[in-house]
Length: 207
Image (cartoon, rainbow, N blue to C red):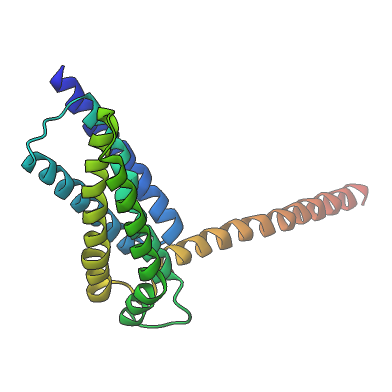
């Protein structure tokens, strides 16, 4: 039924969003950039859905499948910008990191958008209904993903982005490793103390 397809589409999108957020957090090691990425993905999904509704589409079986695929398309460009933002050399400002991301990753993302749009335009002439519908969804998703990455993500990064994006999580990881290393170093010392106490007790018994 229609309600089941809606639940399936929403569930698939929620699972895909959760996994994409986890991947972004693991790769970027920045909570703020993960929030920016999540906001951009939500924008792409909402804008693409609104565009399809404006074209008169209704949710069906094929549309619910395409929505699950669309999440992967919507987060692709943003993740590349986040990667370039993090790997700016040295301790630099957020403005420099944003400019570095645009200069080093912007042309590649634009080229990827052009090639994806070209393939979607070719699929529009297919006779199989699934391919034509997927082509329309792909067109809308790539257009809004380009807007979301170049406008929303980069503007958020330039205004509110961290100058040291990985400092917080790297600091927590370093503290955890330090604690684990300290515990590992304490174990031999405890064993040595126990052995020393055992030897001293033997000597006192002999006396």
